[in-house]
Length: 165
Picture 1 (cartoon, one colour):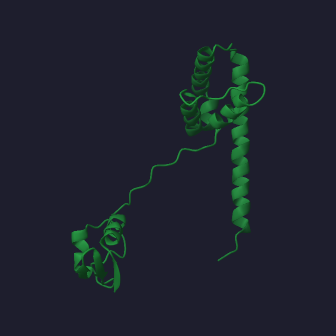
Picture 2: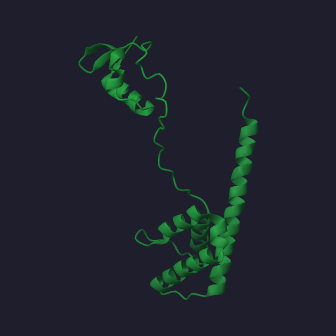
C-alpha cells in the first residue's frame, strides 16, 4: 500500500498507457485528492500496457555543425559579421546543422548556402564573391567534422573512464 496524490496516479497511468478508469480497482481509499493505492493489485499500472508506445519528446536540434561553425567564422576576424535577432541567419545555421556536413558539401547544398550568403551580403550592403564564400563554407564543414570527431573521442574516453558496475 502507498498513499499519493491523485495527480501522481494519473501521471503513472499516462506514462504507461492506461486510463484512470482502468486502474481504479487498485485504489483502496480516497480522502479528497489523497488516495491509498494497493500497488500489489493486478490493476495497478506496474508495467506499460502491452502494445503501448510512449510519446517521444521532440528532438532537440543540434547546437553544433557546419552552420554553427560558419556563424563562428563570420563573427570572427576579419569579418566581424554577427547575426541580428531579426535576421534569418540563426534559422539558416540550424538548417545547415540539421542537414549535416555531407549535404552542405553536395552541389545542391552548396548552391543553397551560396544563395543564403549572397542574399545576406546584399541585405547588409556588403560585396559578395563566390570563391571566397565557397572556401569559407568548406572551412566551416571541415571545422564541424573536426569538432564531431573530438566529441566522439571525448565520449569514448569518458565511457572508458567510468567504473564498471
